[in-house]
Image (cartoon, each protein chain N blue to C red):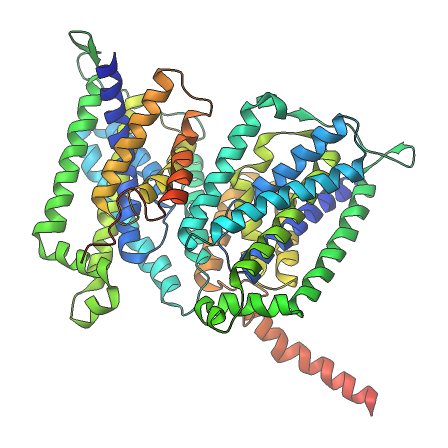
Length: 300
Length: 291
């Protein structure tokens, strides 16, 4: 039972990182990225190929990060030329083409998938709990990075960019530069996560990086709340744990998944915990005054 | 041999064009990418299969399935898309995510109701193949090409010769101005969904007859191929969609017939799309100069 819980937790942690990184592109920079799983895959395959060739795990992770970030920069440059819908379709396309490549090229193990050399930590084979610790540290670092980013000039520039790009430009904000930077940060985190995921699974298939996975990540971001840190985290926990909790209703899982997404978009497009959402309004109305009153009493 | 491949390509291409037409009509009016259109394709194939199973009447299967699917489309617009789009300042990705959710729902509902296995149409045309010289023609091809041509003619007549079509074109041009001069933009939107989802349903039945099998996963390939076709056709242009659909159909058939594929056949559309977007972002057929 303990092992099972840890396995679920690792899965949720992986998707938390993916959702947080996608949110940098979608939520903060306002760009319609629909192929995030492709970068997850690039990272996974890069790191796997390298460690299979005998490269050190940490070095392989770094290379995975750099390569997916570089390809992300290319998408960033493309995004400068394309409007929302076109960018969405292009990134969907890139996701499909990449998965087709993973599936058909010998380098990536072809349709049978690819074995990854297990990770050795301190002389022993790493277990799920080690990966969980690594992932949790990473989540913490990424949350701190996003917080810092939001309070910096970069965060302000991104806020102006998703508010009104034309106005931002006319005030002298170099929107192109910031857009590309957001793509680089988001995709390199996805690549890094992929590298860790590959070593956790010790066997990777192209289907783990398909468009459906991009949609799952996207759903986590929008169900939780776009443009916040808490949103993607809560989304990843809810939708990551849902398949486990709904095991008994396995047959209805995808229906619930699809239904929840449609209803969320219809009634709460800002997400459960986004700005001005139903839940946040209730929290602000009831819980925050409660905390304040308590704070006031202790002061007095 | 070449003629045979061209015929093949035209047949596949017309199914593509028919599937993508719904997405084009909806984009033209609402400016949203409706992936759920591929859900209409699945739903239509299943409705058609059920009606044909019960009545053994192919015409009835086509007509009823198109009407039912079209009406479902109107309801989906009325209760899901219209309220989403009426909200001020939504992220551009919101309607797209909703449509992906709808698409997932349709495929899975089909699986739950009709079962996960394949279903066969078993339509009997009397002859298996028709040979004209070196040309081999399957009767289903004739059905597909003729019916697609017929449906597109109807579409052209509706859009260009009727008042409703005029309302559609005006709304596609500028929805706010159209509303201001008293055009009923809601009926133009309903027209998009009836025709669009209806066409997708017809395409679903055609593919079901052609391969004699339908599965709940039927919509997966069209869901994304459709997107690249509507963009290649210049987003929102019905004529462009027909040309782009035929183009992709022909290119795919040629590439696989002469073993020229270094990439899987189904990603040809996307490679073409990415190239075109980078070279000419307005699509193959641009309508920027139209008044």
